[in-house]
Image (tube, rainbow, N blue to C red; front, side):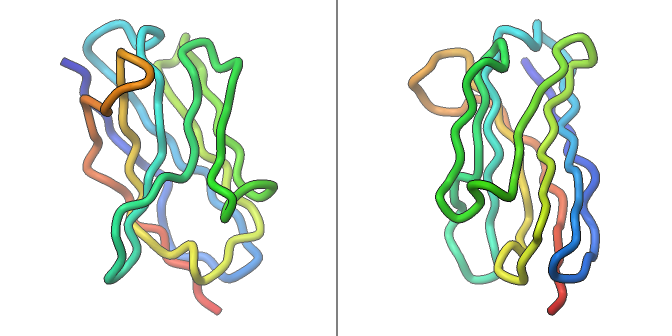
Length: 119
């Protein structure tokens, strides 16, 4: 089992920044690739970014490319999502998820953290 806890969400004005954290406990963190997803009001959950086990490869949704940066610190069992130049359409609950097998479904999910961007 892997337990994931997101933090760092909040209310920010458009153009501002937030850094989300995803802290993991349980199995060896470095064995898992991590993804960030979000679900806005009235919308389906969508992919935001992902990072490989070593952190060597990152992938982003087109909507956040150039504004968001995903990174990880395996010594701290934590993945980060730095979000800059935030827009009102970034408002959503943000979730991190872990998967052992790539490609494959994400096996473990956090509870989410709310990000609200005001215009």
